[in-house]
Length: 475
Image (cartoon, rainbow, N blue to C red; front, side, top):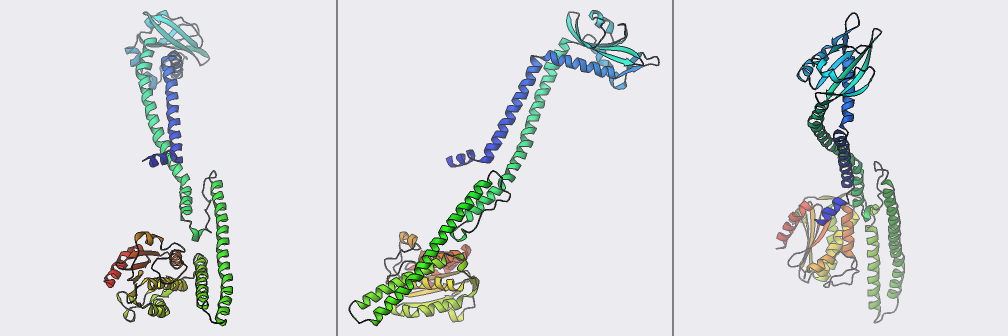
């Protein structure tokens, strides 16, 4: 749970979305605070602005007769005459000529305007009517060379009613809707933008995760990566270049050392064989043989670790297995072990041809090493079987087996089992694992009760089938 929370808190997408939400919320709070302050504290300013605006609308809607005298308003404004009739104590209008005489007014206008000054000129004014404060605005109108003045006024209590009980709730609701739309729409846009922006990073991460010792030559692509992240990707590519260089140097050194050691070992062996016989001669020859074997296996390990050393083609499995059995038949006879091969649960001479896509030499090396390892651990009088199917191959012996801790170490370089007869270098199974990985196969070791089974599977789906079939053959 802590890891999940930490991952969320360290997520770039989460931080940007959180910053967006906080910014939107703060902006909305600031706007709402300003509007509420204006509506509650400085509502008179809005009231005056509304009065002037309404007066200008009425001035623009004035209708004149043939002599140029105002006679009413257009149809849109005339439809609002009911308001002046119903609210004659709260709102009214009138039109004055240049002398300040009223030529047109709303219903009950004379009583409403009794306390108002007959002033001419644009501006804002106040007066008292029935003990109530009235606010008004004057707008000049010119028509046919004559000048008129339209005055519009409303009571302060009407303004308070409209602003506090109608405008403020409406504005709060509007801010709420606007906030919701802003959060949803812009939040979705921000999420999609982040998703599209970070998609190349996910691809880069997947490419980086897929890099292995066999694909260390690969490089991360910077196409589509945000420019802020490009330096990081380029730095990682430079690190890969240095790692590849070091890996190549190591592999070249290993291969060179193996090649360089083969020649002097061969010369030493020849000198010993041509020398006089003695008690130490056989011991020296055995030591030379052991060293030569180690050098040869080091060379094989270096070759198996390089992907360019493989040449893949369709391989006749029965033919390769037959060669492996024939190659190790003498070793099996010397160890008193019976070596046999079965294809699809049948003997080799009855089986149909099976073909795998593989490097033929590497495939033969895997099979030879697995069978040789089984022969070295099989007691005299027992057998070693090779079971080959369409998707898997198993090599089994009837030896003492191994405990789980030993099974975990079997593919470790230079590790040797306690029941082995020869003095090998402990690299055979490591070479097999390298070759299997290069082919995309899975090599595993399992207890067979008794003995051990090494399973080489081309796919996980067939592993259980192969194991079941081999178990039945063993029983």
